Length: 291
Ligand code: SF4
Image (cartoon, rainbow, N blue to C red; front, side, top):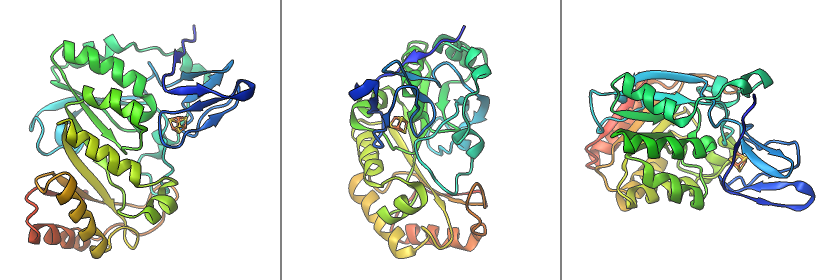
């Protein structure tokens, strides 16, 4: 039996079309069609979440792999993702999931929220991480699992691009204990050219998470010649200082060529220079990854 979960955060449009309001892309989806993320489908003038109940990757990871350096250190986290993403990063490091899609046979799978929580408990993980692809696109599933997880004494961790509309964030974010959000490049030009998206909603998400007291860390995948300009990163540190506080853990990771991007991998010296810049400005929690 194929079970499709009704989606939240959408409005009806003319001719049985719908408009998805989950993320700033606000896709207009005709009847029979799907959104940009490929996991939200219009059936008969109503929007459904195909990803709900259909994890495609489950694992137990060290929490440091998310990466989270200052949340439950040394613990293991029950981690899963689905197919789908609402950004179009040409450098995606995980495109088998982000650009993957459910085949009709996959729709026979059904893993209810209770089962995810049970698995985390069985494996003695103190937290569940919504990760691997972009969890915003399966936000209904995250919310339902997260409520059950809290009732069972587990923590909720979101690893996200932060590209979410306000109404959905207002429901999802208070259910979190920790988040690692990507800040992919500190310019609208970078987000437009490299991610088919915009920076401003991501900054708003960061402020929102900080304001409600979710433990927050931020990751930037550093791509040579694209987002590694030290003056631009200095401006990013200004923003963090003013809006999140300089104690916020900041991760800078080396990129490697992937998906549609053939730029050579990030030299370690680039990451060291960024760490030196942050340290010279008094940022105490700087972490380098993939070197
Ligand atoms: S969540 Fe998916 S369908 Fe909804 S607006 Fe974003 S990209 Fe479009």
